[in-house]
Image (cartoon, rainbow, N blue to C red; front, side):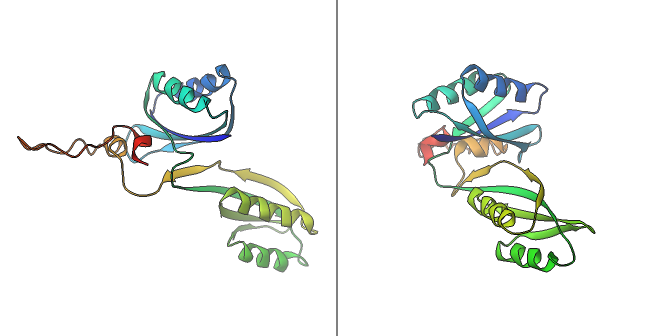
Length: 193
């Protein structure tokens, strides 16, 4: 089963190596790994999609928490979320088939981002099946796919921010008034589904 983990980590040398080594030690294959800056300076966001048995999800999450420089981990595979992937696809093109490729890109709501005498480059954003569909259609026609570059999955929970996200953004804790008991806010992303 595919599990999607989001980990907030410090921008330090070796963090990516530690995370990849953890999955190697657990004998779990990483399907997709996307890393980039987060909304907070000095903190990166990793989106890790791994193929693992159901019972392994808690073990992976706990093991990630134990790593140095890992701030927070969330298993959002079953939570309501938005998932996207970016792909750049270079296609062989001639004067005779260019218009067909332009029409195909329009059908898939993709964009032509580079045009050369012998090729053109398509940028497409969407779910994995949409990208796979465009590649399949391009391969079924006389258009030859020369090169494909994909970003990996990027996932974000739908809805309101949890306490963990607000803390990662540096928003801090809400001010407490004496004698007033605050509403219970779960300290864990997954508790707020």
